[in-house]
Image (cartoon, rainbow over all chains, first blue to last red; front, side, top):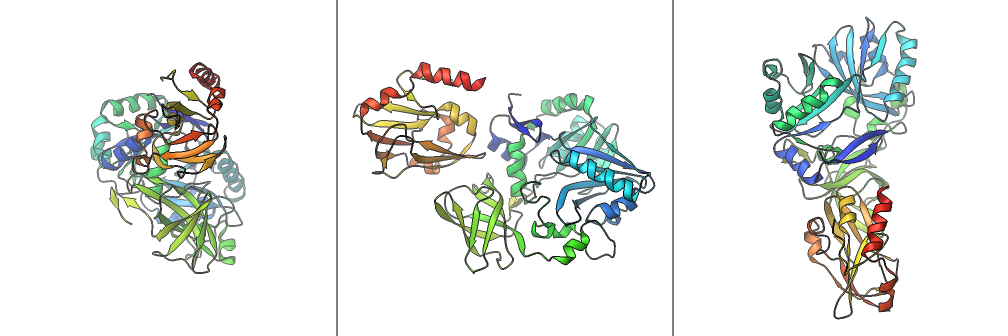
Length: 348
Length: 129
């Protein structure tokens, strides 16, 4: 498919298949597909699965009451740093499926096995490298999937966001990383190429990691390793909504979060001057609140200007103007509430 | 990819064309454009600026990365392509037509030290392997 390949966490991944901008616009306006098989599905099976997850992750697993429902969460270390961000699907009371990032998969497995031995020694935790994952995203994504998988519509058309269902050998979830509607489909790796080719023949354009990054940035979704990592408090990475500090449930990292309240926040930036915001650029705030840093930045194809996620002092509010140090210049940027784009519409 | 014989090239993937009026026009090669991908921002040097060979003098940014452009030879900037400010994608469309800036060489003989098309072709082949 004439893809430009790059190394990504040890995986040989397509950066783009021609023009990253075209791929981006195609997902916003129609449909595109991403091979995201580098992400790892992990099956957690046994009677103690829920009890284990109650302690393992920061979001409250008891929000999952209905089979097929999914939950986005961070897995924290005892210091409250983010080991990984992940999605957990509730399949049955003795079977949960987790999807974790590629670059952190080995570390995640080691951590989970260690905690398993402590919390629920009987639990089976199985990495599913025999599975592949294809994300079909865009306003026309679901229709294309139904066209390519005859019969699947009945089982999946009533899925709400963050819900999934099995159809034949396909696990179809209404989730994504683009801010558009669509499905993430987990299937046996041996069937992935033929499924991909069928989607392609039906007119679904392949999209690479490059478009995936600009789409998720516009959608205001965190990227592990950039917007947060083991040294970052999730409350300072815009992930407070995923951390359940209200219930009396104890989880790994909870005490650390209670002990050191957030002093920074993740905000959106829109560049007012000409240029491109990039991660690690320094942000200078006006009101004496101190400095911050861009965690993810780039060019937004939908806004046709540069945007960023930045970790800034709590004193900064949407509407404020800040300066970003780009090479030898200070460029003007406006603080905004993200997401920047959802379902094809500009929100800032 | 075409590598015209009438241009000179640098190891950092700029092309240089000596014009009839004695100025040199500078751009980035199709190879550099291809590596960077879709262009979204171009910053050109100010007219009148004195450049020494190897100076960082322009920036091209794509969706993927920012790249510095270096002065291939010493000289004074006489013109910059303002059109690229609003249409950076012109570099993707035709990297030889979308010039970045012109300079008046301090010493025209400096051009002879740059790579010719065969030398640049060889460089690309060696980077490929």
